[in-house]
Image 1: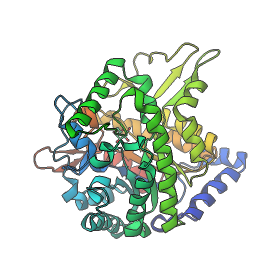
Image 2: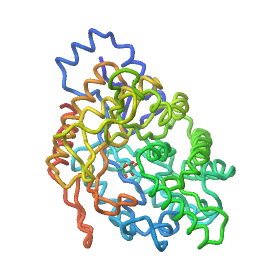
Image 3: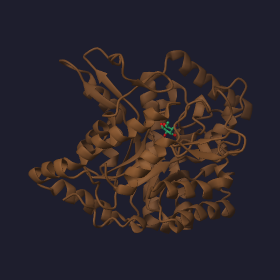
Length: 446
Ligand code: FCB
């Protein structure tokens, strides 16, 4: 029995999340195996969604730290975010699309820089704006999954040392309090931070010259503003990574407490970037790597209501390092291998390590080839369903992304969207892969 009878989409609460997790974990192994063979259906109340993030779709996020960094000369961003997808104005159309595809939830982020554009100055108009999006979700029967900080912060916050500064956690908590008081009663699940471990992953991936460029960019930002240090959450100098991680961890804990103080029954967690790390041969480095990339955050998640898993790839480790991807597999826009089994691998690992229910809060592929996306979604969901049948409590699947959008330093080149966006008219056009995901969602079944 893998139903989630307590998970009413619109009113999901903490008790429901925990009860669903406990029921799945308690299902006898034989029954689960039988269900696996007989039943392609996902649990009742399983959330089907698509995700966006404020800075990547809203446009003109001018009070944010990254807007400022995008416009430095020289900058590490290949192009500025500009109008993005103009979702600041067109959010209702986005919600209509989510609904029309047959999805049941929408993950979006609120922009701290809009809500608190100057330190201590909170914008009622912007709190009202995001409240309308939450209400717009409910009007369409969609569960709002809200990220409080998706990489960006107000420029003033980063200019005073960002997450490195001891005051950061308390400032973030004050913002979380304001947001939750304004519309927390309508939120389905709250995520404090998006991928606070991203710099740990990038530490292994980016070559030294890129780290040097990032350090120089941050130094240029500080110089231009006449401050001692400018620190962002996803663009940083290598030397700052450990301090940023500490700051983010304190921020998550303080933010969670602030949210809970306003609405104790709201499920709160954070999202983690998780590569499906696999071991090859004797003395594989895999477990050591896992410890470095996720260990501390998985500890924190043990006391959360759920954890968001965001997976895009796998990595195979032997005793010396990461092995090259096998020839002939699917590749994304940058030439990195994509392998559909990685989603289930990441989900199984994270649940095994934390024992808390998992929300797939991002999964997707950046590609111009939408047939690859369609194949990839269907195959990844097969694996995810198997993990569910094996007893892993998965609350939902949220695809990245609803729209082709602004992909940070890479600009508009990578295409992750279920919908393309005309860069001049902002018209959204669903791609065939959107119907593939929508079809599975409508059936709630493979
Ligand atoms: C994740 C980010 C998201 C998007 C995808 C492609 O790391 O959370 O904003 O950029 O990657």
